[in-house]
Every structure is written in C-alpha cells, then in structure tokens.
Length: 513
Image 1 (spheres, rainbow, N blue to C red):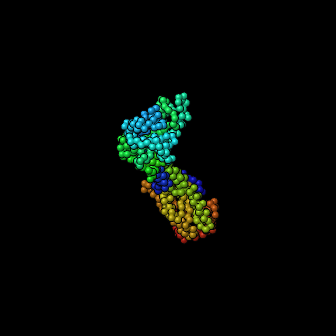
Image 2 (cartoon, one colour; image 1 turned 180 degrees about the vertical axis):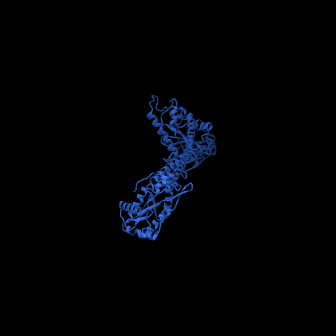
Image 3 (tube, helix red, strand yellow; image 1 turned 120 degrees about the horizontal axis):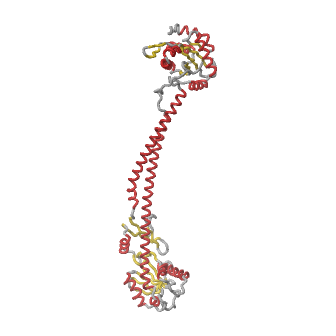
C-alpha cells in the first residue's frame, strides 16, 4: 500500500528559519575577527613599546659610554701632563739619595701646579714610603711609610705592578727602564679617592729616565701621584663637555641600583659614588611617530578582517542554509511540508522505544476518489487537494501527534498522546468528516474526496514497525471494502469498529453522489 506517487516540487515553506547553529558560526567568525584585530593592535603596540624601551636603553648606554670615554680622556690628559716631568733623567736623578729638594719643589711640583693646575702631588717609593707631598706648589718632604689600606699606596702598588708586567712582557733590547710613552700611558692608573677630606680624581705615573744618563742606586720606579678635586668647577667643566642635562655627583653607595646610575670605583674596588643625569629618551619620539602608524595599520586590519569575516559569514550562512534545506527536504514532503516516510520511521522508532509503558496508535490514511480529480482537472488541481487535506489533518492532529505524507494520496498519522479507542474512533470520525468537505480547486470549482483510515494500536496490534504498519494497512483495506470514507481498527478492536461508527457518525455524506 505504501507505494510512492508523483510529487510536485514546491518552494521552501515559510516556517524555515535560520538555525541557531548558523548564528553561532557567525558569532564565532566575527569574534575571531575581533580577536585578530585585538591581537594585531596589541602586537603592534607591544613592538612599539619594545622599540621605545630599546631606544631609551641604547641612548642611556651611549651616554654612559660617552661619560666613560670622557673620564678616560681626562685621565689620559693628566697622564700626559705627568709624563712631561715624570719621564725625565733629571727628575729621576733628583729622587736618588740624597733628594734634590730644590729641583723637586721647583721643577716637579711647581711645573705640575703652574702648568696643569693639579691640586695635590705625591711621590711614593716602590716599598710604599711617601717621599714628598704638595698642595698646589707648597711642598712637604717626609719619609713616612704609608699604611697598606691607604688609597695613595694602593694606587702606587697597582702602578708598580703594571710597570713590572710591561718589563716582563717587553722584548726591547734597550735598558730595562726604558718605556715608550704609549706604553707608559698604559701603566698609568686612576681611581677616585678622598684626599684631605675632599673627593678627588687621582692619576699615577712611574718616574723613569728618558735617555739613561742616570744613577741607578735606589730601587725604582718611584710613583708620581696627582689628584684633582671633584668640586663644582670640575663638575661644571664635565657638564659643559658632555652636554648632559642636570648631571649630578652623589657620594657613596646608591640606595637602589638603577640603570641610570653611573657607578665610580675607589682604589680598593668599593663604590666611591655615582653620577646621575636626565638622560635623553628618544623612545618617546619613536612612540609618537609609531602611534599614527599603529592606528592606521589597526584600522586597515580591522577593515580587512571584518570584510573577510562578512564574506566568510555569508558563505557559511549560504552553505548552512543549503545544508539545512537538504536536511529538511530529506525528511519532509516537498509539496505539503509534512514529514516524509524517513521522518515518520524515526519518530515511530522513538515511540517504539517507549513500549510497553507508553502506548501509541497509527492511522494509515488513503484518499478516496482522488484519481478522478487528477484525471479530470489535472495535476495542479490534485496538488491543491493534497495540500488542503494536509492542512486539515494538521489542524486536527498537530497537538496530539505527527502527520506524515508517504505517497501521492497516502498519509500516515502517529498519535502519542491519545490511545484510548473511543477517542481514536472519535478522531478518525472527525478526520473523515473534515476531509469529506468540498475542496476549492480554483476558478469557482469544488471537488469532493473522502478518506479511508486503518488504525493500529501499540502494543495491542504489535511491538515493532513491521507488525504495526501491516496491521494498519489491513485495517485500511477493510475500511475501503466497507464503503470508503470510513475507518477500521486492527487487531482486537476490528470487530467493534462498526458499532463505534454507527454511534459516532450516523451518516457520512458521499460527496460523489
């Protein structure tokens, strides 16, 4: 009985709305686009800030390197000034016993003060004995052994050690006292120290002969040490030379070690003090230059991302709609929009799972006198009849069951909320009366059809799809044999169907008469 008849295609029913899955995909696409914009903007901002910090760091390193070079140049300048009197036969001879005090006061100390303005002068022997010291050009001769922790003695020892290293590494065939000026500068040492309670920059130089016309009776070399006070004049000259903004000197160890602190070491390796200044910050200029570019690139990325997101969203929606239509038409009748055989089978399988606790019933429906309508008025009129019948069935059944179209004029109804036989009979009678009412097929013409119904109840008529469908089909054929536009029960209810029909529907008009 369940053979397929020709279907007429129809447009997608208006109740087909966009599925929630499609909306979720669209939300994910736009969320991904927004995330891409955010990550791109954050990355560009991070790179710009990294460039900002790196530029500031490199600028600070360059300024610190320039300060280092300036201090080294300052040391070298003092060392060159010292060489003019320290690498000289007469100075070397004047320090031999007995000391030539007049020469030391006039030609050594006097020249260092008059020509180079070196504030303090010390002459120390290799064993750490202070021979003479001077403040400006005021000389004091003494023979005092300096303590091991004295900064003057430490610098003298470092200078002597540097001179010995040069001697050991020299391949010169000349006298072992000879040192070229370039190498002599390398033996010179410098450090910061507190002299007479005042912080000073100290430079050392070995006192050596220049031509060798000397007396080598005393240990050598004696060490010439000169100090320049770190006062406001000295700092002003340093600021002017460097051009640093707000350059300041702070004595002692800084409270916190910061990259902007330029540490100075004393002769014993401890922290003597530190410089700090308002260093240049080119990173801010880089940031101001990069900010418009970041905004421009972020805007471009946003436009492209949202354009792509819109395009992908539309394609996704189109594919989703196409897939949804395919799924719908795979499970629904194209003409009436009712569930088809596949949909009915799935629904029936679900109902079978509830047996025996939850019973249900099947109505197998077949239209009466439908073929003459098709033959007389054409398929278009037949389609209108089918659609009208579908609408009437849905109106009666939609709240208590599912109506499916499984063939040309064949329908099947699954009732899950109403299984009492009296109610089933009443519903079947209502269906027969409704379908028997005239149907408008256009152009002022009306036709009449009927419906024969076979009813199978579960679990009374069977516990599987095959038995229930067979029972409903057999009941349907009995209904047709008894005069059409009527209903018949399958199984134990079949014998009582006639009495129920007489009680519920005394006369069903034969619209074909």
